[in-house]
Length: 190
Image (cartoon, rainbow, N blue to C red):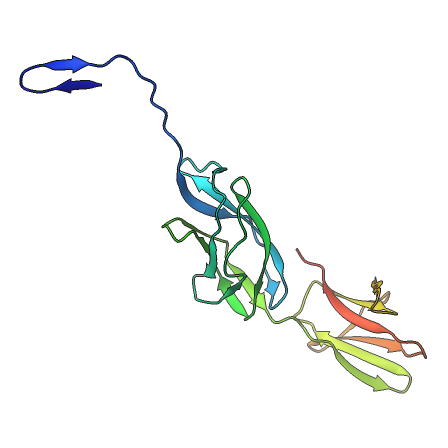
């Protein structure tokens, strides 16, 4: 360091200057789309320094929200561990191009990739003689129909026959017997 004035100047001896990285922003792991209303999905948020490296000193929490005001649950993350937080979030309303936001309340934030939040498809039922007709919308892709003889404990297995497509509905015909049978649609996408 050189210090000078109108009378004189002096040069300091050599010194070691250490520049410490500071928290600059947050990044989100890639979130597959679509996700479904009221169905928890996992997100990963990382604290990043000015060099974009993982900022492991951050152990605080962040506020979770969206750029269009749709609430995210939980509204605050748990504490970060070594600069990272992995948790499940839920969105309670359908949305197109929802962008979630992490904000520490002190000026550092980060945005997730846009995702669509859809209403989960509903199964419809009708009976005809000793057959149960189960139907759901064709627009709901990447779903499989599964069945279980009990709910506690449930042992879900995929229905063996592929459904028929009639118009804008998938239709599965199941022969009814005297035992209980439960059905669900399971999303097989990412």
